Amino acid sequence: MQIEEFSADVGIPMNCIFPVKNYSSEIDPSDDTDSLILSTMSGILNFAEDYILMNQPDCSDINA
Image (cartoon, rainbow, N blue to C red; front, side):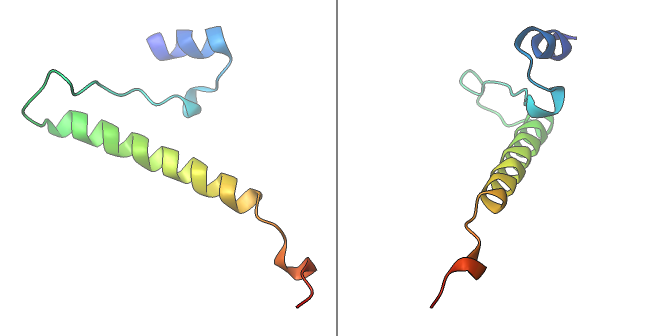
């Protein structure tokens, strides 16, 4: 599988690789392609949320 090969070549875990299809040559939407892109966006947003939560300053240290 290409994703496994890519993961091994560059050292990125497979769960961090999001395959998507380029829409530039298609006019009609496809449920299969749309669900792949929505799944990818969901994964990216989850990673972003985790990053933000892990890098927030601790508000308990702030003296008001």
